[in-house]
Amino acid sequence: MGLAVSDPRPAGARTTAVVEAIRQRLKTRALAPGQRLPSIRAFAATMGVAPATVVEAYDRLAAEGLIRARRGSGFYVAETALPPLALAGAEPRRPRAVDPFWVSRQSLDATATTLTPGCGWLPPDWMPQDALRRAVRALARSGGPELTHYGAARGSMTLRRVLQGRLGGIGVEASSEQLMLTSSGTQAIDLICRMLLRPGETVVVDDPCYFNFLALLRAHQARIVSVPMTPSGPDVAQFEAVLATERPRLYITNSGLHNPTGATLSLQTAHRLLNAATTHDTIIIEDDIYGDFEPEPSPRLAALDGLQRVILIGSFSKTLSASIRCGYIAGRADWIEPLIDLQIATGFGGPGQFAAEALAQVLTGGSYRKHVEELRARLARVRPRVAARLHRLGMTPWLMPRGGFHLWCKLPEGCTAIAVAEAALDEDVVLAPGDVFSAAQSAAGMMRFNVAHCDDQRVMAALERAIQHEAATVARPVQRQR
Image (cartoon, rainbow, N blue to C red; front, top):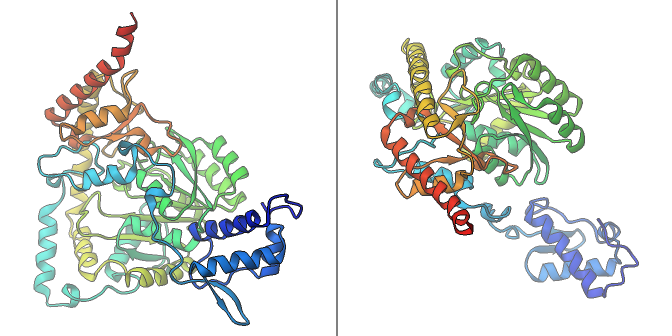
């Protein structure tokens, strides 16, 4: 809001206010390097001050090297004006146990002796290592360009054709012009945000949601608004209300098997989400990374929408390999073209030809379908066993998912997930506390467990000790009062 012309503060204070207004625009990236600042008269009118005040403010910023004057042209943001984007300072600092970056680092940096029931991937011996080795050996013997060349701008035609068939199986019809490969699913979302999102614009997420959505949106300096999750998708009434009042640019979600809750989107909810998004001109990013874990496909927003307002993204890191990095984007052809240019500008293309061709060989080699069926069956055996063990420790699943490897659990009354996670970390066990997934910080008594990593008595023993430690800590002040 501009300063009133009758502002009684001294001229120096008004100049400082103008300077701080420009600094804030630089901090939020609303002004980019090389961009022309508003004219002196225009900005004076915006701020409700005299032109001489703006002149003095611009001179002060120029003296600091933040802006540059060009004779006869005006003032421009200096190329060196913007400091490095410090994500840690972008919002109030969170306790380390619920900071998305800190939690991710603990899982990524885990040693061979670390137990990781809070991580988001399957153990190595659950993955199709033999099929991957065969694909790598075949490519190494081929004598083709796969070992040395960049990938094509859109990515491997072979893999994109495989993707077209796979997407068709869930009702998503995508032409070759509507598909591109990326280096990962995270990079896919990052590119879309670069194209569609400006700093300060609003993005809606589920509460809880995949915690790296929150980390990535912090990097883009988005304003995050969350909607509570239900077993059939986001709370539709609240979703409609948020879209009406907040006018968000984007909504990001998992619709197959939701992370972390394991919820499945219902057809009725899907239709209402799309109607609200259309009414309020909100674009949807639908992350389908867990789709292959479903025993039967659930509704996809991209299928119902025909890739008009919904952009579908995914990768193969959960079912094949997190080391051979490759993701994809399916969307409108007129959006894919600028996304390709953005990927060239920021990474000179997507996945290398080697990664894409290796994955294509595994996906078409006949073993992938069997591998996925075995994963589903193995998880179906492990999931109830782990749920029963957690129940004996006083933890209750929010729901029993149709598939996948996550259980979203309520801790015993009085226990906080942060304290339990910190106590477990002392025993070299990495957990995923609920509030790391919650933009509203409303999941202090929840925890996400990876059942594939929980089928280990050492995990349960460490978890039991961590819960007992927390319960004793909570009870101690009460005992002193008696």
